[in-house]
Picture 1 (cartoon, helix red, strand yellow):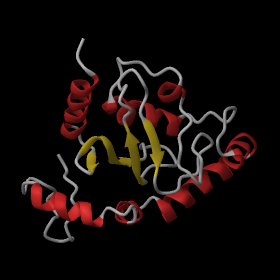
Picture 2 (cartoon, rainbow, N blue to C red):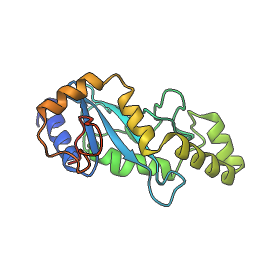
Picture 3 (spheres, rainbow, N blue to C red):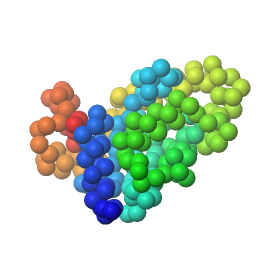
Length: 191
């Protein structure tokens, strides 16, 4: 059985090698942001969210803490705090899961199959149950207003990370994203 620290390193390497854009906070593998894209063929399609992740010292035996930084309209996600009500993450988390599972399975399933009977956002839950077409329209409206690439970029910039990002840019190699010349460096790498 490996130590929690080793497991965090292994899971982070898997996540960094996936298609997900990851930004570490203070060079810590226990706190980071992931750019998450809404699943295709859902009203969340085309949306881009900045997800804040914190791994407890007891990870993988204790579930990670996950929150949406830019707004999303969903019955199981608190609109103001961005906290996620997801049984797999909260109650039924298992050390067999890793960070890639969260971003490739759990969160996409949560957005595809919301559970209005266990809401954190009562308005979204009621609308989904009573008027599903209106719910879909409101989700799409939120995606257009709050989950654009620019909104996610703003969420990355507004978290007080500017100084940290500059330091990360100096420390990181030039293996970052292809569009580095077009935009100011953000300290994020696409791996």
